[in-house]
Amino acid sequence: MQPVLVVEKSGEIAASETWTKNNIYLLKGFVYVKSGAVLTIEPGTIIKGGGIALDPTGAGKGGTLIINAGAQIKAIGTATEPIVFTSNAAPGARGYGDWGGIVIFGKAPHNQIASTPAEGGIAGLLGADNIAADNSGNLQYVRIEFPGIALLAGSEINGLTLYAVGSGTTIDHVQVSYSGDDSYEWFGGTVNAKYLVAFRGYDDDWDTDWGFTGKVQYALSLRDPLFADQSGSNGFESDNFKGTGEPATAPNNGLPFTAPVFANVSNFAFSGTPSSAAASGSGPYQSAMHLRRNTDITILNSVFAGYPEGLRLDGANTLAHATAGTLNLKGIVLANTTIPVRGDRAATGVSDAQATAYFSAAERKNTILTDASTLLLNANNFNLTAPAFLPQATSPLLKDAVWDGKGTDAFFTKELFRGAFGTTDWTTGWTNFDPQNTPYN
Image 1 (cartoon, rainbow, N blue to C red):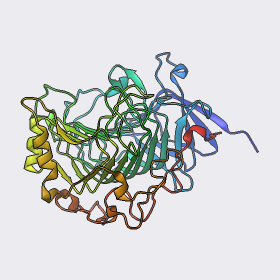
Image 2 (cartoon, one colour):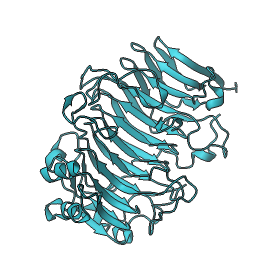
Image 3 (cartoon, helix red, strand yellow):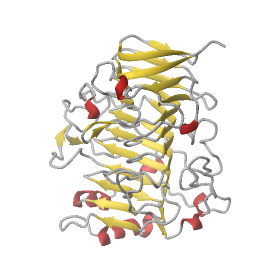
Image 4 (tube, rainbow, N blue to C red):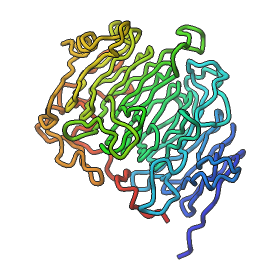
C-alpha cells in the first residue's frame, strides 16, 4: 500500500481544481478560492487545517479555507464517505481552535454597507449585489472538526461562517465539532440548510446577524457542560446589527431585518441543573436563546434543555417585533432552566414579566418544564462520546408540533414531532462524536 500523499495548500486558488480522497490536504494560512474558480472535493477526502505556526506568511493565521464571492465549493460527501476537515494535530492532542474553519462569501442580500469587512482579518469586503438565489456550491455530508480561531480581539473565525450566501447554495448534513468560537454563523444571506450538528462548541451554536433570512430544519447541538466562552455561550444568538448605534432603516445598513426560520432544533447542555461556573472554559453558559437588536427570527417546534436561561428577550425594539409577530417562537420546550424566561431588565428595555407574557401566551403553545426527564429522552442523550438522540416511544416530544405562519413554507417537512428527532436518527453513519481519538492518516 502506497503512503498517502500530503498536498499542501496556501495562498490563492485561481483556477478550478479537484481534491481527491487518495491524498490528504493541508491548509497553511488563509487559502482563498478566487472568483470564477470551482473547488471540487471528492467523497472521503480528508483536509487538515494547519495551526498558526504553519502560516507561510508569518502572520500567525491558522489554516482557513475561504470561498470568495463568485467562486464555488463542491464538497459533496456521502453518508458512508463524508468529507472531513480536521485538525493537523495527532489524536489526543487536538483542541478548540486548532485551525480557522470554512468561510464562504456570496452575493445575496445583507444589511450592512458594501464596504463592511469580514471578521477575523479575512481580506475582502461585503458587496451590494443583492442576488438572493446566488450559488456558492455545495456542502453535503461534511465534518468540520477543531476549527474556530481567534485572530483579532473580538473578531474570530467560526466553524462554518457564511457571508451573504445565497439560496442557490446547498447545505445539508454538516457537523461542526469543538469549534473555538461559534459553530455556525450567518452574516446576511438567504441560504437554507437541513441536518446540522453543533458538537461541543465553545461559544454560540447558531449565530445569525446582518439580515440573514434563510431557513433551517433539523439542527442538533450537544454541549460539553465544562466548556463555555467568556462572552457567555448561547444556543441561539440572533442580532440584526453588529452592535449598537447603527441606523435601523438606511439601505444596506439595517434592512433587511435578520429574519431566519429555524424548525426542529434540539439543544442539549446540562442533563441536570445548569451551572453558572466557568468550569474548564473561559466563561459560563448563558441562554438557550438570546434574541436582541431588532431580530425577527422565527423558531418553531424546538427543544432546549439545561441552560441557565431559556429565553432572554433583549431590547424594547426586539419586544416590539415579538408583539407584532415578526419575531415568532412557537411549539418550544424549555427544560432544566434556572430562569426559563427573562427580559434585559433595563429601565427602558424588557421586564421579565413582559418577556414571560409573550413566551407563555396560550396561542404560542410553548412549554416550560423543571425536569427534562418528563420528555422521555434516550438514556444516552447527553453522552459526549456515544450519544443517542431518539426520544422514547411514548415521549411527549413526538406530537404537538405547530406549523403556521412562516412554518407553512414548502421548504419545511411538516413533522409531528418537536425537536430534531422523531423515529429516525439522521446522524447515523456520517457523524463522529469522538474526533479527538480518530486517526486521520
